[in-house]
Length: 214
Ligand code: HEM
Image (cartoon, rainbow, N blue to C red; front, side, top):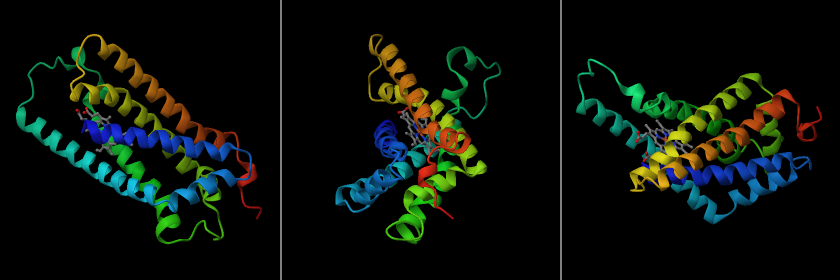
C-alpha cells in the first residue's frame, strides 16, 4: 500500500508539471508537444502500464485492508474514543480514495479514451489535446468535480504521505513530525497546483488563446 501510494505521488509530480505548460501562453503548443512526445516514448508507455497496475493494486489493497479491519473488530466499541487519537480523514481513507477513483475514471474517459483509444482528439484531429482540456474545464460540472476531487486528494495525501513512511518503518520521534509536515506541504502543493486549473480556466477564463475559433 505504501509503495503503490508513493509511486502514485511521483506520478502526480510529473503530471502537475506537464499540466502547468497549458499556461505557457503559446496557444497550447508546449502542452501539446509534451503530450505528443509522452505518447511516443517507449519509456512513458511502460511507466503507464506500471501506473495502471499501481492504481489497481492500491485499490485492491484498500479493499482487503478494509475487510481485514472489519473482521478484526466485527462488534463496534461501546464507547468510541477514536476522535482523541485520529482525525476524520485518517479514518476515512477508503471514502476519500473511492472519490479519487471515481474522478480517475471520469478523467480517463475525458482524455485518455479520445486521445489514446478512439483517436478522436489530437494528432491532426479536429481538436488538439490542449483544446480538449480547456473546453472540458470551461464546463461547470467538470470544473466543479475537478476542484472537489483535488481537495479530497489533498486530504488523502495529508494523511497518506506520513502513513506510507510509517508503514515502511520510519516510525521514530525525530522523523515523524518532519514527515507529517512534508505530507501537509505536499497536500497543499497538489491541491493548489491542480486546483488552479478549474479555478483559473473556468472562473477567470484563462487560456483564451487555446480555445478553437468557432
Ligand atoms: C492518485 C491517487 C492516489 C494516491 C497518490 C494515493 C496515495 C496513498 C498513500 C501514500 C497512502 C498511504 C499508504 C500507507 O499507509 O502505507 C494511501 C492510503 C490509502 N489509500 Fe490511497 N492514493 C490514491 C488513490 C486511492 C484510491 C483510488 C483508493 C481507492 C479506494 C485509495 C485508498 C486508500 C486507502 C483505503 C488507504 C489507507 C491505508 C491505511 O489506512 O493504512 N487510494 N494512499
